[in-house]
Amino acid sequence: MASTIPGAVHFDAKALSMSVKLRIPNGVTFADLQLRRRGDGDLSFNAEVLEEIYTFSELAKQPQTENATITVIVRWYIAHRSAGGELDPVMEDFLLNINK
Image 1 (cartoon, rainbow, N blue to C red):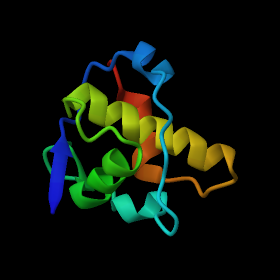
Image 2 (cartoon, rainbow, N blue to C red):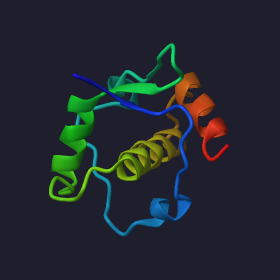
Image 3 (cartoon, rainbow, N blue to C red):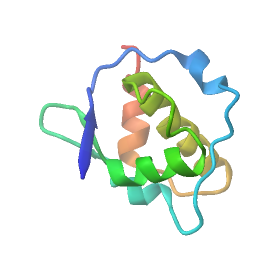
């Protein structure tokens, strides 16, 4: 199941410091999100993978707003890259265009 985030978004960077620990289930990789840019510029991703992370991190009862979704994806990507994970060109492009 694919979900989208608008290509041009205003993101509250303070949310990156949220106190909830983001936990990724074993065997789930950042690439599993299947990030893609749609023709309209929106970011498409595999919502089932994100739902797994919400559940595993005990965030399932939190509101899944656009900003919360972006926060989870961005925090996961930062952790992924910090652990030596591969660059994701779609995510890099998305990060360059946040708050523009």
